[in-house]
Image (cartoon, rainbow, N blue to C red; front, side):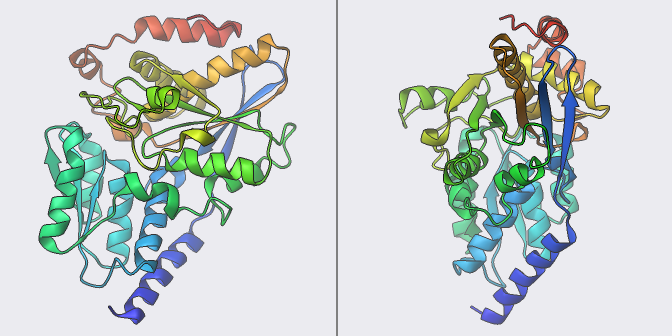
Length: 354
C-alpha cells in the first residue's frame, strides 16, 4: 500500500475538519421548569447534516491508520442511512467508491444524499440482513467493510481530541450550570454513548448519562438483563437509533440510566421540538426530548436546579417523505395525537404523566 497516498488521504480529512467549526449548543428555557435549562447540541450543522459525520470521520481515520484502506479500496457499510451519507462524503473526499447496504425502509431523502456524494445504495428486505450482506459485498470486491457497529466505540478517542463529550463540556463552561445533571442520547451503534460515558468518568464529571431507546430495539433490555443473545425481529421505525441485535459498540456499564420511549411519543416529541426551535428536527431528536421531559419533571419535583444537554441529531428535512407525513404514520399504524396531547400537557405543567 502506498504510504504517500494514505498520508494524503489523512491530510484531506484533517483539512476538512479544520474547515468545519464546531457544532452549536442551543439554549432553551421552558417556562414550566424554572431553574432548569435545556441545551441541544446541534449536530445537524455538520457538513453532511448529522451526528454521524463525527463517526464517519473517525472510522475513516481508523481504517486508514490501520492499513485497511488504500487507493483501490471500495468502502462498504451497513447503515440505516445517516452514517452512509457521511461515509459517502468522506469516500468521495479521498477518491474511493462507496456502497451502502441499507434496509428498504430507509428514507428516500437519505438515499438521494448518498447518491449525491457518489455512493451506491444496495437495499435489502430486513434490517437484520445488512451485516452479512455488507460483509459479503466487501469480500467479493476486495473492499473494506467499515462495520460501524463493531468499531464505533474504539475508533473515537474518548479521552478528548474534540470528541462530542469534550465539545459539550467546553461549550457549557460559562453557563449558569456548567456541569449538566444529565446528558441524554440515543443508541444506534452505541459509539456516542460509549464516548460520552467514558469521558464523563475519565474527567470525573458528576453528570449522569441517560440513553433513550425505542420500540423494536434490544438495547434497553440488554442494559437491564445483560443478555447478548437478545434479538428483535422487527426493525426500528425511528431511523438512526434502535437495533435488532446487541451491537459490540454499545457499552452498558457506562450508561447510568435508560428510558424506553414509545414510537408515537418520539414522533409527537419531534413535532414539539420543531415548534420550539422553529425548524424541523429528525425523529431521534424527538426520542431524546421525550426522555428529557421525564428527567426535567423529576428534577423539578425534587426541587433541583441545573441543566440537561441532549442532541439534535439531524434535520427533519431528511424525513419530509416519511415521519412528517400523516399517511406514513397511518401506514405504520401510529396515532401520535394522544402522545402529542400528553407531552404538551407535561410541557405546560412540568408534571410527568404516564
